[in-house]
Image (cartoon, rainbow, N blue to C red; front, side, top):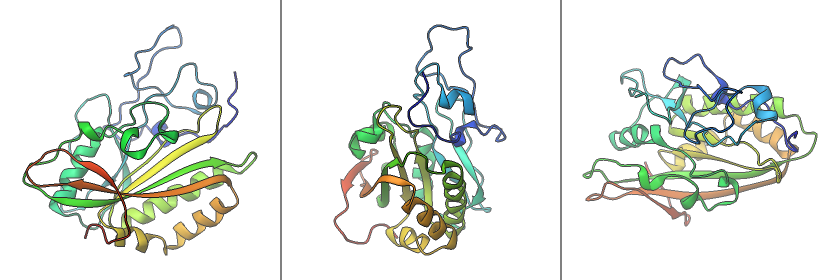
Length: 246
């Protein structure tokens, strides 16, 4: 059965990075382990033979003075950007490493609360660190017939621009629900100031101009990701209008 809502291939189809593991079940298999990483291509995304339950995080590459975090051969390997961050603080570096394991808990992330949509409870940071980060969530539904290729290309350029501008740790986005068309994307920033600065960059402005005419639903949410000293876990809290991070 064809999808009601089609789209260009997800960036998980990229296979040029040496640490990306994109093996999937063969077409002859009648059942797939939900923890297997699927192969992504245009045909499989438009007419999947089984639900896509794994979508990797897109982590910003670390500054040139830091080695890239080693990617262990686990089932949730991340993608990384071509552009590198100009800098990153120690606590954010710990978060960056933890986010190698970031993933949605199920296929209903677009209609699930942010605190419950992802595996925050599985992420662990050093006990002595304390910090907060700024999270932006985009819940969206594309207009029928909108130009997805141009939109996704503009989004990719805006993403790389944001990394080079500084502060963006992670960008993740899903695949539109086959029936409702709803989707979710999220960014995690070192600070709210970094996120605001990215809004004025030319590629971001172009992407927003395209988005204005391409979406039937486009709702923004803002949250705080918090880590307190004495604990290893992190929590998601509502953003109430104050500065976040530094």
